[in-house]
Length: 340
Image 1 (spheres, rainbow, N blue to C red):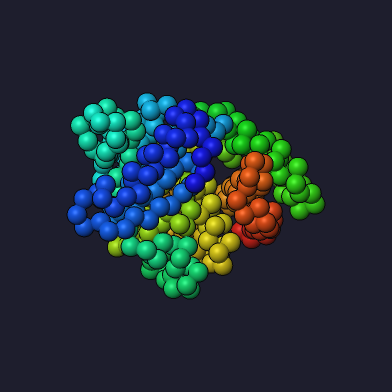
Image 2: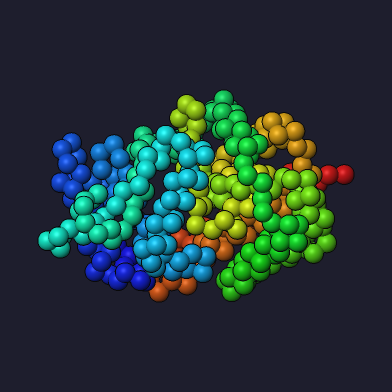
């Protein structure tokens, strides 16, 4: 377990994880608990239920160092994810310190941490898994497009003005330039410069999206592993901890999802999603803007891959540079033609 956490201290995090790793914590019917670790959370798969514990970590884009911050994030996660997966996000649970000093799940003592409680979804039904298996159908992609179109049509409109939207993209791209520039040249420099040139010279297209009310409070991290091909499809794990990064153009998110599908070997999915969404939202977006979003997102994903190498003890260090190059190639090769 990654114990590089702020605020509560290593012993406290380990103590909570030990509690949630024991089948007896959950009562009859749970005989085994599977643990999954991410940068920001620990997930405990206990029978039909998943319990998510946020680590007390601090990053430039979030601060989970206090109990109050983690509670707030848990409540936001529950509320925001119910937009696209209402029957998956069941509620909140508490870790409590009982009178004898031991920890308990949903006990009567002092609350020492909060958990998001979710319904466990069937393994192997995510979009990334089905792409890898070669079993994704056009009908399934159309069903995903329909769910997303309804979501975007009813989503809260974005809170950024045109200047704020452009500056948010510019700020994120500046970070990408700094990180990627330290590792890559050639292809990376060309792609980075192309995105910057668009931000400098063609930002009127971005400003028009804001003026036309097209920016929404979206998902924020729309990747194939977050899309469950149930009936109807479900989309989980939105970016709950940073509202600014959820202020997106739906076509930015769809292009991002398509980019990830292309990396897995299914470029047709992104094209189909774009076509279906454009028709459903009655939004004939300029192809130049779609191409910008693809290249911008490719730079962001390459940057996030390379950022792992700046960690004190990066996991799988051999993985990140090849992955970053794969994203940069995808961005450079994005084939949607510019509008005439």
